[in-house]
Image (cartoon, rainbow, N blue to C red; front, top):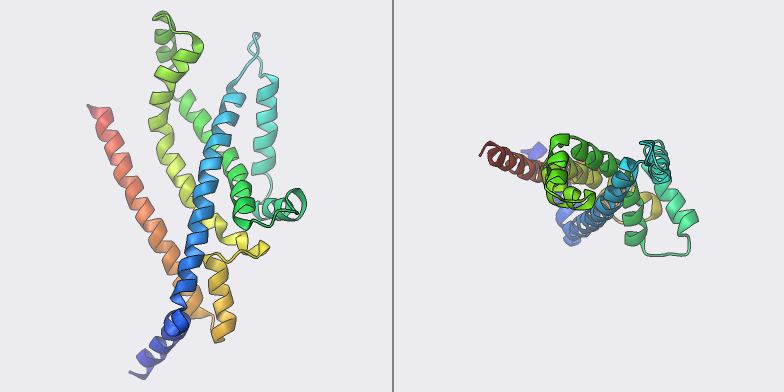
Amino acid sequence: MEWLNSVWMKIEAAFITKDRWMLYLKGLGITMEVAIFAALIGIVIGTVAAFMKLSVTRKGKPSILAKIANIYIDVIRGTPSVLQLLIMWFVVMKNCHNGILVASLTFGINSGAYVAEIVRAGILAVDKGQTEAGRSLGLNQFQTMVYIVIPQAFKNVLPPLCNEFIVLIKETAIVGYVGMSDLTRVANQMTSTIYEAFTPLIGAAVIYFIIIKLLTILLGLLERRLRKSDNR
């Protein structure tokens, strides 16, 4: 009983006393806000980069746009996201004091490099015969891409995009480096407040796990639905 009382006192101090649970809730709100905005920015940037990378010249060689997209993807994927965040905060947008904006742009640009490869792979996974069929029906290249290729590629890229969003939620844990009070930073600050690290940090880990688990379950349901539609 003494052990249980001790555990409860730690939980109470970390989450209940002075309504400290609200701090975790606000931190989770910042985490989700940054992740959602970053995911939207990443999808836009990644889609554009994917089409740039797929572009070729009349001779069939990679175009200038393709080379630019390759450089962007290589640089972003080859550098740590925490360094990208620090560069964006202290160099590129040093006069901007909107942490949500800076973090969302940073993670959006970072995610865009990975989304670009997801979208590109999804488009290339569509059988070339679909493109040829569209052209034989009198559709131009743009119409074939919009009405035939992209709808089929969408099913291929949707699950990986959902996984990318899950990764983003976990990656936002580094925004504390620029002073933002996300869920991880709140838990870390609470360790100094109550002079005990285990309870607040494990509590934050449990919150992350629940959010990720729920999203994983939803992703599984989505994938099963997509497979059912393919079998019809």
